[in-house]
Image (cartoon, rainbow, N blue to C red; front, side, top):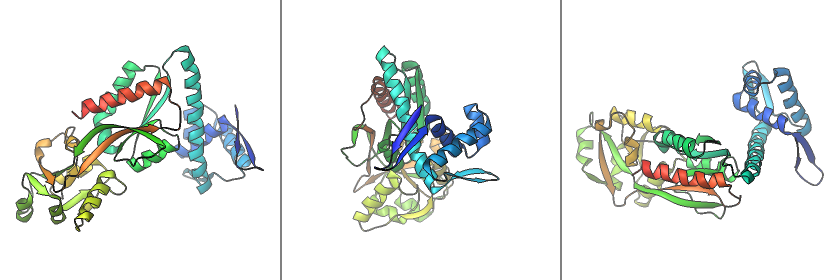
Length: 317
């Protein structure tokens, strides 16, 4: 199948979908050998397809070295567009197959790291039972990244914390939770212990060494914005992008976490922690299911929305 991409009145590129798919696999896997194995084609043919694409575009898309390949700046831009093209082609096939009444085709969902471990298995099982012919793809990432992927058409829907309202997206609230202070039950100094009452004031968190995710994590931004309103700043001991890693460090007494209550649900040793409500003000975080308002949804996607809502709501009860 040929694909024409117009980039202006005088520029028209003619690309083969095989070339696009070949480039995406090579760029993602960082190796012609691995990509050829994944696609089930000979490596010389794969190299020829990628080279033909570069000739069509008049751009070098990949830097080739002894350890494999990495995308150039132009390659990264092309990779973003190529993923969208392949996704839209797959979506068109799914919509056409839907005329026969079958609920099939690809469904891609973005999940935040704090929720991924808790719902990945039940969500996958729910899809397997309700949509056995659909191809489910789960992507983990921060809300800002998932939001951009949604707008670019690389995913169908995403579970986001505190997304800003936009004409480009539709939203459904799944859950609202107040963030809490989580402390290890051991190795806490006397000064810190004095602050750890059943409820603590938000302004007093500046007295505690916090272990927080890096920006643009939604929890991190919420904490900083609300503390800034009180003219105080969080004392950040460590930046760790992983909920379980944060909790392990808190357990060892290396700092304190500010997270939703449910993050302890799937932790193997919850009794190793004490939890404390945060007041004046509470840190309220809204969990939303979000999808594009600009693209028509298929029957499979509509069923997927309902399944995702139910699985997450049940998991957070």
